Amino acid sequence: MSTATAVVVSNENGLAQEIVSGKHRWRADEPAPFGTDTGPSPYDLLLAALGACTSMTLRMYAHNKGMDLKRITIRLRHFRIHADDCRDCETKEGLLDRIDREIELTGNLDEAQKLRLLEIAERCPIHRTLKSEISIQTSIL
Image (cartoon, rainbow, N blue to C red; front, side, top):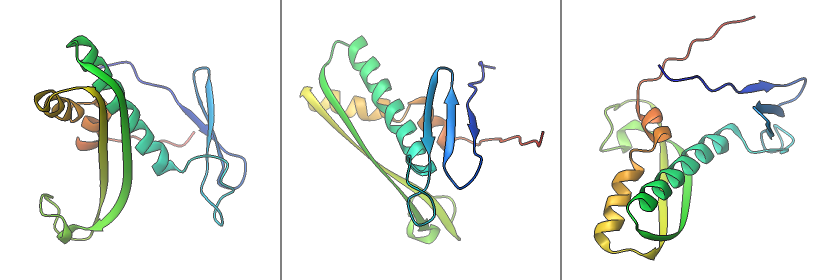
């Protein structure tokens, strides 16, 4: 088992949240009219985690393989869709979550390198976590 990452999220009123991870502090919130829009929404943070992990994974792989990768841009969008609208999904009833991830790569890369980087993107740890069965253990203190 790997070492757990500790993140503390706290709130005193409204929807704005204070998030602390080690020496890093930031906020999460919901846009108006529900929240005060003082930070990204929880789904924005989820997409940011996937995008950052994808970019880091691609950067490390390209560096290790000596690829001429200059810039990586990841664009992500989250949707709730009807399961019967998803041809490739096991779930066929109700709603499910869909994330569209577009990867833009610049540099002197041939098609084989781009295809390999696309395969590597599927192996980023956050992608694998989101695609795996997740057990969340919750307790009240």
